[in-house]
Image (cartoon, rainbow, N blue to C red; front, top):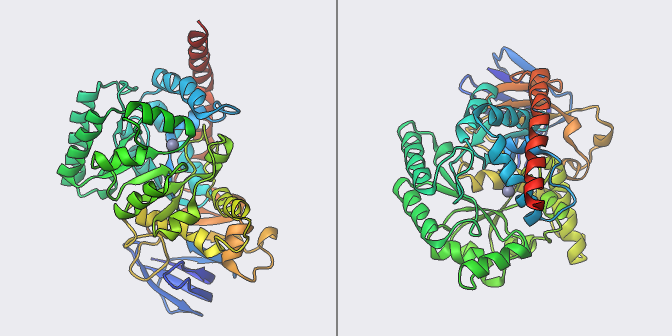
Length: 442
Ligand SMILES: [Zn+2]
């Protein structure tokens, strides 16, 4: 059992309730049993004194490529299309199970230290991410990556579909809903026939879809050429992949696209750091909100977003909308915080389990440093979280009742070894990228 005392509890419940000087009691199954003001009688063996600091739900990263930390900083100062042409072949050359474990473990370390307790991942060799999830206690939602090139697995498309079928069967047999996902890369890397096959397989298992959509102007042109003038959203709707899907990016949306997304109850994962860095454009978040679309937040991969920082994503998400609408009243702090927590949980279909601090939900909790200069003073904790807090303020992190970060140190991941392993892979990564560059020039 675990108790967190002297907490300024930012629940992110439906009313945005904040409890000053509260106590949270977590039972042995990792479920929040009580949240109350003042002190509470409990028999917890682990007690964390928040000393008046903010205690909030763990952040949910609703679009990432965790294993891509191996390629961090190698897609800079170029557009998405050049970035993909440079990195995708290099990834395929270098990645095997151990390399993906190493990259994902580094991403898990970075994520947990930065308050991210759940990530919707899209990467090759997804078994590797699950090795890391089990070891570290971090929640990682994984899926077979579906595209027409063979990938590092390596599997041709038909074999990839057979493997996906087995993956979903296992997820079903073992009641692991967080693996009941398929990740078709995008409508520019998949033809209509293949998209239809993926939809049929998803239908068979009730699997959820995680897909890139409408990220750049270049993508819109590629998709229009490949799919008879349609937008990515229209293609997804026509191939039965849009219903309740997670759409990464959703930058270039027509009014009709937004209607389709709302009608199909799909979620958009906004990735403002990646979008701004790649000059992809500014997503129509205010219009999506008006249409009733659930918008979550993501970092994207560490080659396009470079870090796994959802505090930065929160900051950029709010500021970009305020700036482009010339209206500082849009996207108030609590709305932005919801994007990084409960809206992520909704996108992942687990809002009954995580995403807010409420009795009966799993204890995925972040405790912020009570002595942080940037969090002093705190008059409105929602504003403090969105406009002032950062990863360095994350003091303690709990996932499902288990303390995984304490006093800014990871407890379930060996920090030094994890960093060292990725450093050692560096020269191999650089050689693979150089080879791709040489081939492109010739
Ligand atoms: Zn992505």
